[in-house]
Length: 332
Ligand SMILES: [Zn+2]
Image 1 (tube, rainbow, N blue to C red):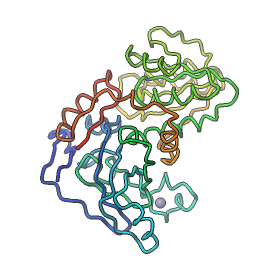
Image 2: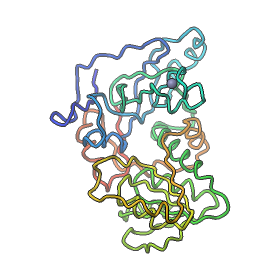
Image 3: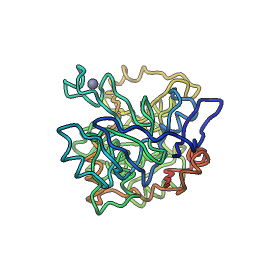
Image 4: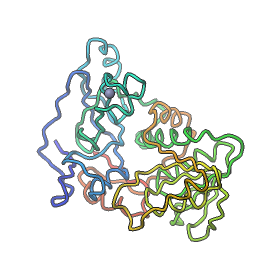
């Protein structure tokens, strides 16, 4: 079978055509992807910004359940999932450590993450995930929309962490897929939302959703925003976010500010001077992403800027690294 692997800085991304079919361990399901999408984390892995031993890339998917190895108490669930389209929570949890038993299984001390950390990903003909991680896709949600479930759940989780009340002024920094989704979701609340980015065609998509938009070069730094969501993952983004925030504002980092990204050092003194509340947000509950898709409450298809095939994954990853792209989706 094929597997798209990142083999380290020298070899880069390769399509391994003689990869071994993954073993379906007890409690796991063997999955065949129908659509996969390239995320910023995939690009971080390929650029070396995020370090990981060689592994099969990919964690945004919609797949069909080929086979399962259910535990004794999973037989009925496994039967119901057989042959069904599913999406899945990408992090696995041990259910035994102190964080798992405290209800924080998303932060499990022994967690692995599909295609990111300690578990081969979905850019392959077949891959595995625990049966417990899988969610059937409602019939009305087609593959092109279902592949966004993970990203959407993550955006929804971030928005919920902000506990938007009243009619706050919100700025979303960064016109990548996450920024556009966060802006779209918050515009559906009572908030006065604007997205700030660099690309006219992306701003047009925001405009289509009724979200106000500004070019980064056109905004003043007036320190009048109640909430700033930084989706850039860059030191410059965080610096701008802190400048836009009013005293006692919330600044949410949605994007990993990895070491070595950008040249500038960050002046964190505004956190103290303005008494800012700094939040970080990672993945969210997948069922909520699926629910938004099932209710057709969010437009995700407008975010697809390129459709290609798994065989072209190395080229697709290069294309996706162009900031003018939003979402690159691949099928078998
Ligand atoms: Zn655990």
